[in-house]
Length: 480
Image (cartoon, rainbow, N blue to C red; front, side, top):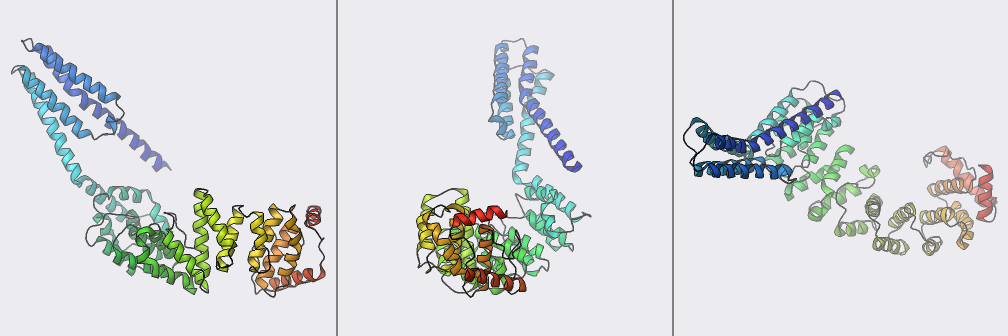
């Protein structure tokens, strides 16, 4: 914390000094001309006073113009000094030492500024600063215990800013024996767009050879902005990396720009979604641009297939639509989602995901719920509809079908559905079926799950609940 305060104090001090130097440089020509005018008493005296007044007016305008402080400093100085020199040469102020000194100053200072501006535009100072920062990282002794935390160091952020011209200072650290240094160097290149010939390939080789997942993840993020198809396809292969960290970094690096890359990465995305080794990864989530229509069409088509591919494709679509609705409420999108949900031809796994999504956004209306609660729909879909009715529409006529539907679901010979049904019954109707409130459902093959399934089936057969939802609500309130 003390280091941060010290850095902020140094930055403020640097800004103050820079502002004072700029003000002094802008006002110097006016003061030099004023000195010449006071010392000169010839026929061109009036011209010198006009020149001094002109320079003073220009300085005042520069001080009070909000845009002038955001403009580059060099061109303004060069123009102002050469204009003052032209005034002085036209005035024939004489050859005394002060006039000669003024001419020299008005000529030499803009030349120095021009040389500095040229040096700055060449990128040499930025490259030098980048090399200094890279050397500091290489010689650093204390590092976080977690390799991934090396990406957030203050020195890494400073190095990233200094690499605007050339990435070579950071690439030189990729051969360093310490993995912390390599992670920091790659983090400084994160989402870099401008690569020289062979530099992106060097980062890719580092990712392919590294044993540490943090290095592979950092290298993948560094290549997130490349636009070479061959490189993008090779980066997409890291979607099959054994490390969850690397797979997530690859997803983030690839899916932020599906408008241009989807045809390049489509095969690897489908392979990753269908791989049983990564079934627990869930949806492909990212924080960049929303998925394009072409991607959504492919994911929807994959939902019609069997196995893990359909499940993860539906989860990915659910994540996308949830982001879209959170960023901006779109009535057209809501109508499209409701139509997909109500359509029996829509893949069941996608209908279930859309039902949960619309339930979370409180967009399941009564006409749609009436269609979802019928017995021809998948059991999880009917269960979502039942819970929504109990929450939002307990006083509606459709509520009379809630208890019969719950009993039908409880009688199904499926332990996973029985657990989900028991969860709804216990949370919404207040009937204790052995579930721990606020805890995840027990594993399907556990003894507790078997006992809960037996209780649910006994409840369905004994018919021990009140006949209407309102009485069940009162029972729940009395027990609470």
